[in-house]
Length: 365
Ligand code: GLV
Ligand code: MG
Image (cartoon, rainbow, N blue to C red; front, side, top):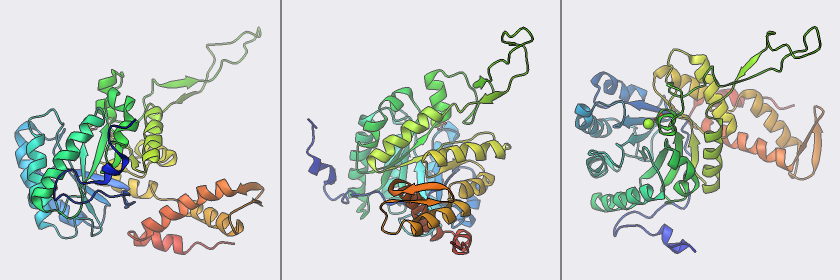
């Protein structure tokens, strides 16, 4: 028995706060690009990045020194106020922030200051180290109070980072804790530490996490364990991403890969991003401008995928029954797979002229 009537989930949690959304808009968010608003060099680049990246995120949490927490908060206020086309549900680039953790001395001021000063520009607040629904309920009510105080017309959405063992255990209840929930990101560094995993890398694979080919038979027919045998590195994050994708899909919200810390290894970065895309994620964090190009490419369906998807759509007519295409069976279910791709392509084409041109050139025979 739920402790709250289903109808009450869509009532504002404070008098005068905006109406919660019934559905989370599917806005392009292939790259959530992190910047430190206390770093003047980085902050100066923000205006030029508007329109080149789907989301700019002013980071206030980890990677910002304790002495710079206030400067980061105030820097973000200034950037939001001075940068055209950034955030507010309009324009080409969303504005997100990652506030400090709920047990930190900074988070109350982060939320209070940001919502009252730039709440009309903030699209999403990312909350780190979320453990359970209670963390989302706290943020939910506080945001409603602050929205009412600031006279906001549009609710600010909430994004949780999945980076504690308890958070993973509670992932479904976190996703369903509030109509504000926009999505989840994998936080591989904190999660590895919290679970006592034995990797010191920020995201990505590990050469020690592998499976090995069976030994071939030796001269006497017994297994020759000393023979050359291929090994295949496995993905440390597969389980968590799969759980995250299912929980998000169940609740109509969006899953994301998190940070990939080896900035120089663009190939391994691309592989991790692609695995996440194939499993159902809609985007990723980017920590360096060169990761943005990778994310924009990987989190969009390829031209070949869209050519194939359009052929299936055309061949399936009213969408029922089965057809053979290039020797392969297509039916109602594979049509739905193709429609997922086509819908994403259409949505991305609206914000990305190069992608639009590439998709427009496809000829379906
Ligand atoms: C991100 O916040 C992480 O901990 O990986
Ligand atoms: Mg973290």
